[in-house]
Length: 352
Image (cartoon, rainbow, N blue to C red; front, side):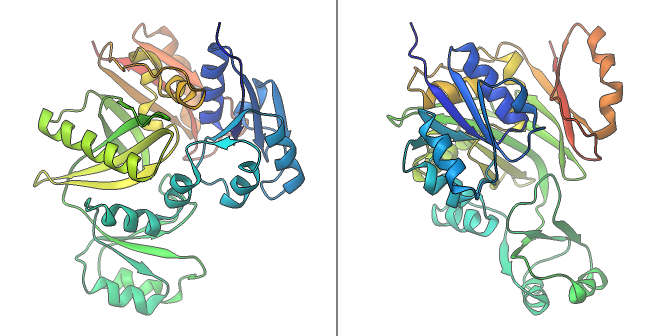
């Protein structure tokens, strides 16, 4: 009989919901801490705390009610983790969370591991933007260093005229300037790392973005075995350096010269691995639960080629069309408000 634990999840979005479902399937209990009572995960848990992540008393009470804590977003404040960690173990670990929360910290960390990224520079004001742009060729991207995702807080600069517009820009946030990559394709991998340091890999996925938002992820990626081995080597090196216990998603650029560059890290379940829910013997969510609960990790097997198609914004109104497709498995997240560029669900489509 499995030892029943109460898993605390900080954040109640769809990733928290799918983690909770996986945990429940393994006989575990779930307590979600979130600031929003309408989050998708709130409807399926054993216990629920609705409070701000700055509420120390609520955090202490939450931590004392669970056996361990994990996250579904890297935007959980480290100050909240400091409080929770006084009472229970936190996964994936504060170091992994802290580094992944800031694009500059993340890029510096990767660079110090002698792993390549796109060329980048910290930018705090217009003069620094002008100075930094002298070393980069167009187009280049200006990004907020923290919080924004799915293309938010990102600006493509194509020429001198567009550069000059940032003279009146709001520079109150920290920013990073990145040189564009001569891109062949984008891929990603999920690595799970256990408490003993043992790792398992999910297959490498090939990703396609539209307007900065992930549109599709397809497995297996159409890359050669040498590149797959290099992706796995970099993933393991990165996870070890982070002292990560849990799962880590790494997004890569592959250049037209076949060079491999890390784009982003995420120490939690990731949109680019939702196909694992249907196409693998174990999903990314179940593997996470296994790791943090001290259960054996499953060796991952891909049962059939698959594509995840995200359902964005108003596309949810047409999602019923997938119900008659025998190769499609539809998942609707249960978000109460439909907004442009908001992920409302996904569909996994078998390709064989």
